[in-house]
Length: 507
Ligand code: HEM
Image (tube, rainbow, N blue to C red; front, side):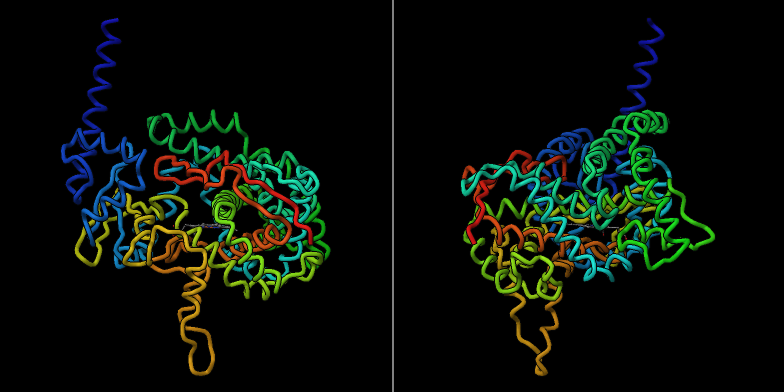
């Protein structure tokens, strides 16, 4: 008993020394927000987890123009807000400020999903090239699947012409999963219950367990904890089992003639491998999990935020409907084109504004300094530190956006109306105000070498779905007001229990 007490005291002492060293080290680096003391700074960590949006904004006001440290449950992050700092963070080489190492460390992907998840990254060039070059061709099946999903999931709940209350979070998570998956794995797997359940749950499981493993489990025990987690959730095995018959049949097709391959992500990933050295079924299922990880959660969250804005400010329904009606025939979905979608400037602006105010969280674009890095103003970041952007503080800065806190669905549409050049070409900055445009003042899709390559697809998908909804339904919030957001540390999520009233339009 005495020995056990001694051992426990020793462990606690070691932990305290470690925490003290860590806090002192962080504080030596740069000015920090909150209480100045080494131990009291841990109080900041706790409060910053609950109020990260206001805390980052306060800290940005306290240290204008300079980098500063921000504590999150024992994890210190150096935050950048000024344009030049953001630009340098975006453009820093991967072998100095690493996004991959930051994601790996913060989410413990190697342990939770398996080493192959982070070791092979060939889905990224496939998204950059094959997905983006095929956007025109995949629009018809995407819209078709949205229609299938909405008919099966929304229309079956609506009674005649009555207003019907729908809890949008689970419903649209399913609709977006099914529509996106039509482009990932094709038809009929995109509608398979087991597949959809796995695809929707996978990201949530990893985002929840990653921080738990990082902050609560000692480094030495993480491989074992990861092994236990993997043997319970079996994400990779389950995906492999679902994809195996499809991969086998595509391999047969591929051996005969490449032109017969369906036009979807699975085919593109397979085509990416040289014929003599095919990617294994295990490797392909890991890639598919990786694409699902980056594509589904982000699009679903953003779309639900947009839906809450639309239903709580119904004046936008008629504005968007008028624009969309000029471009699309609601009864003939096969006529919908990317070109027509490109003419829906207000729809684009509405979604871009949603992402400005309701992005992924208060802090994003994390990078881990794998070597020392010095910003051009002389600020030195030692190896081992995390650097990230105070994204909400940027997006809600009144110096960058007029009435920055207010939602103005047509903000970016008005900005696009800038002067045309003499030869009638579009305003030089027009692309910046499109949904897919980015700058140091608009960080929704990140920036620099890791700028989101899936943003063109995400934008097309969300615009199609929003256009489809305003053409087919009238909608309003059940309680009249936008439901409060949910924060998980610095991560922002739309309310899970928000209810929107839907009514089928009489066209
Ligand atoms: C509204 C939807 C989306 C949002 C808000 C979003 C946002 C982001 C952000 C913030 C980053 C990190 C950039 C950085 O750290 O600099 C990122 C990276 C990435 N996104 Fe997206 N994304 C969305 C949809 C998608 C979709 C649909 C796909 C795939 C089809 C995708 C694929 C990726 C990939 C592969 C990366 C990593 C790029 C790299 O490491 O070079 N994203 N995204």
